[in-house]
Image 1 (cartoon, one colour):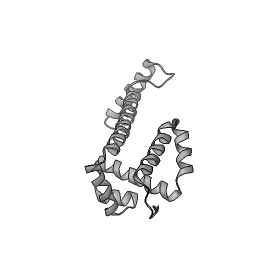
Image 2 (cartoon, rainbow, N blue to C red; image 1 turned 180 degrees about the vertical axis):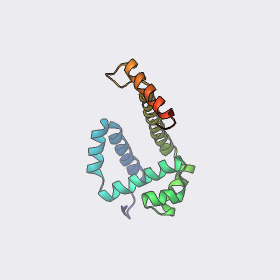
Image 3 (cartoon, helix red, strand yellow; image 1 turned 45 degrees about the vertical axis):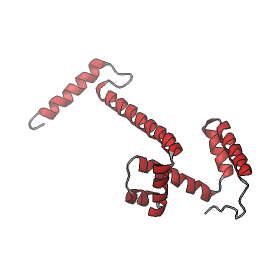
Image 4 (cartoon, one colour; image 1 turned 180 degrees about the horizontal axis):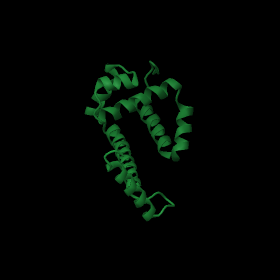
Length: 148
């Protein structure tokens, strides 16, 4: 578990440190830079801890119950409860960012489904319609034959 110093910062210094951190995050460009920055910044334990918090929040927003989250992420009910409480009362940032992630997932699932449906009705690339429909008609006819 990460530890915070027992010696608190002055509020002014704390604000400046957080502003610096926010500015650095804001200046990151592209997924590769973000990945390398967090790889260098966080210890393996911190990455897991923060990743699990994000995953808990995402699963809660998607409607998963505590038991499912516990079994999937191997986290305690207390941890899930803390994230749920944060989402409910102060988690505007969580909700906005994870809401976009959920929309992106749904959009990707939608287009995957559309591609699959189209592949069922359109001929494969490089084949003509006539040949494809002839093959499909023969398959339907064979399937309808009583002893075929």
